[in-house]
Image (tube, rainbow, N blue to C red; front, side):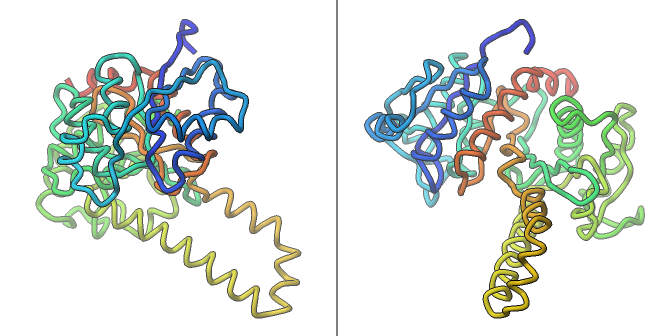
Length: 334
């Protein structure tokens, strides 16, 4: 940690399926892991303190009471604007004011994107933000963006995503000279719609980017790029399809094991391998999803996050702050 500086992260304690219990537990565990982190939990103080009483409360944690919660089915921008005392908005306002340097929430993705733009604010030179997600793949981890923040993109948006993805991959994921590819419907130069074709020309002209052309959907799982650039519509579909396939395989395997004695015997011998595979592809170990292009560390944790995933999300925010991620992106763009 440079200069032994303290890092303050505002955590939305009321966001996600397992809030506030797992959020509070994750905050406690993160403080044990990182002595340089201070955490502000925003939300219903009575509920938060009821969760914290089960643990030895760390002096690195304080609670800020709020009276409102943004629900997943609410209109994102409207909820952020109207619910001024929501746990999410109050935490984001702390980033805007400088009271905190980072924000973590497992709440509504749409509200986090809206709040990132409206409350935290976009970086100078960034037209639209992007959600980037580290993907556990077969050959090497990949970082894909956008996965839901900007549905319709221009070629310049995709260029900016490539620049931001390059910075995140180098500085946070520690990949030297990241290989960048555009998601398209083929690897031939003539493939892609007008937006993808236009983006290809813009990205290719940037000498500081290691651009290697296109990647198809069937190559994502193999990790054949360090950074995968796409619009938020296609990125979100690809991400959720991958999650669905993993959940489906796990369900099928469980059903087959229940129905067959031989399968149950076989799984006993393969339990170590199966556990290793599930661990390798477990989203909880890969941190949260950063919203890139805003003026601070804004991290979206999975809605089903339990404490290990919250620790990973706080770790992602800490790393982004320590590497001056927002400033690095701003310098590269401008």
